[in-house]
Amino acid sequence: MNIPQSSYPRIVIVGGGFGGIALAKKLGKKEAQVVLLDKHNYHNFQPLLYQVSTGGLEPDSIAYPIRKVLQGYPNFYFRLAQVQEVKTDTKRIKTNIGEIFYDYLVIAAGSETNFFGNKGIATKGMAMKTIPQSLNLRSLILENFEQALLTDDLHERDALMNFVIVGGGPTGVELAGALAEMKKGILPKDYPDLDTRRAQINLVQSGDRILPAMSEKASEKAESFLEELGVNVWKNIRVTDYDGKKVSTNTNTMFQAETLVWAAGVKAVEIKGLDSEEFLCRGKRLRVNEFHQVAGLEDVFAIGDVAQMETEEFPHGHPMMAQPAIQQGKNLGDNLVRLMEGKSMKPFVYKDKGSMATVGRNKAVVDLPKFKFQGVFAWFVWMFVHLYFLIGFRDRVVVFINWVYNYIRFDREARLIIRPFKKQNRVERDTLMQD
Image (cartoon, rainbow, N blue to C red; front, side, top):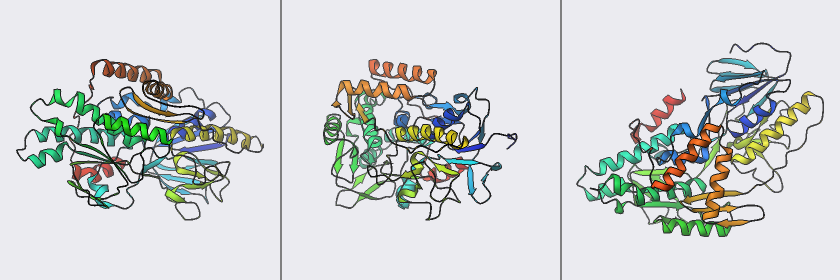
């Protein structure tokens, strides 16, 4: 990989997500050679992917070059690479661009969509975990409305304008709200010769309430907000299959829809060499101790979505969200420095700063450790927090300007079909992008 030899210990980080970036910044000016590997050259701000999918933001507004994030750090190296295998016995990592030796290895590869083995949903449904997937979804949404203009079959037209979003967590709720606002304020103007009032947005949740990780008050208010926007909220229903047109469930309820978005679960990204039962636990996450060390390995660590640290408060690991990943990255950075200095490491303690979700214009729910509130103020808090955690001044300015413009004009300028998308080619396209 043309990385020079150094007298400093080499720390290899796999993944440029929230955890990987936080760790790299912590180590950037320390006496260590830091090598970050990622298959993309940018950090992706996943909480706003749904706005890319619905035309509210362009993808470059929520992506930031990894090299620019870590400019100025003297012993930092980035390589565009896809990790293929970890060889813990020889302390080497095999990638598509060669092998690299490590003194300490940190797995921060994040998570991917979990279809739970359902091939129909995996091949015909849509995921929204990456920027390419969000652009695919944006194209499909717009193409379906273009196709609806051309058909005389009323049932086919309705199916083209119908959406089924599976999963009532923050991703599903926020996407449903954004689509409802498109239906209300944008589609009638873009398609005046199409009865867009017939478009149906269905949010399907297998449990008895949406946003199950938040307070009951937040769940009730979010559901009320969605219903105000015209979203059909279906609870205690589990989607079992999808053939590209018909959505089957475990009840007599079925949906006719050309667009199904799967937001019902994620699993950790698996890496060969760390994929045996001795390392893995629920959701394919790597079992780690309170110092982030992978079970049975002293020099291999894991943070973020890919790691499961079991505690009394979090018996199934910490939430797979940005905050735990960031805090773990910072804690591990301090611990690696202490380890290299011959000092004992400090156990990780998660500080829950709360959770939030937005449903639409002036509609959001926020659960803080001591306060819980909903409505307009919650919406402004949600916007401020997301702007704060965006990387880069330019991205913050661009997103803020877009939000102000969209708020004043009731518009979403980025509803563009940059590249046509066909559902039956999704698996092949994803494979090509990964290769």
